[in-house]
Image (cartoon, rainbow, N blue to C red; front, side, top):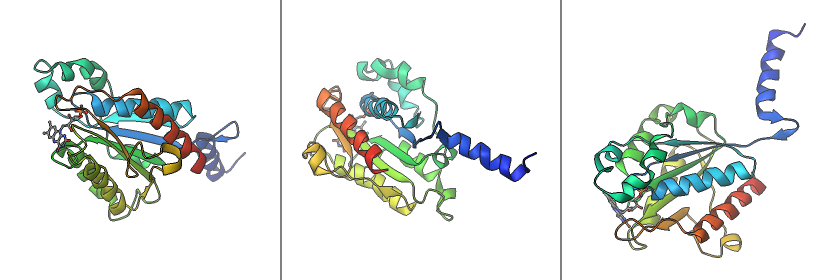
Length: 214
Ligand SMILES: Cc1cc2nc3c(=O)[nH]c(=O)nc-3n(C[C@H](O)[C@H](O)[C@H](O)COP(=O)(O)O)c2cc1C
């Protein structure tokens, strides 16, 4: 009979190794009201799954989804899809090797809802429980002058405080079609320009690159 300690280790090994393949575990955490950031999150989730990364997707809670659902068509369009996604809890981060954080750009920064979620992980900070995990930011912003890059950097700054490792977007793969700081898509003055095929293709290329370096 195996000693209990050995059984415990066998269970752990069984969970991370599936027929000789070691899986990377990813979480995609997003905040979205009118669907644009959700669409990037979904594309990331689909690409991660496509490349055999064990991915989970979670949303940050926001009452505005219900408040604006009848008021704006952009909110209505993906309301049910967004609502069907599980709400993020800090503990979910502990089980991930790489975490993608997506927030709409609000006033050149992350949204207060995403910030509230990040603040709720404050308990992890003193013991650096997220250290060594990878972080990738993504955002959607109205216009390219609207501070989307600052939003991406705010997410990375959270990662630095947590001891996380940022993954930048290399020039040779994406030819400057996305900034080095993270993934971004511009939704226009009305917020109704959805992420285009080129952005989706770039997300796929970027995720493929991630599988090669991790
Ligand atoms: C409160 C608020 C503040 C915003 N601030 C900015 C901004 O500073 N710069 C910008 O380019 N767009 C700004 N926008 C536009 C959103 O970033 C954009 O519509 C985004 O795609 C919304 O994301 P979502 O569809 O995932 O909710 C703002 C929108 C709201 C509601």
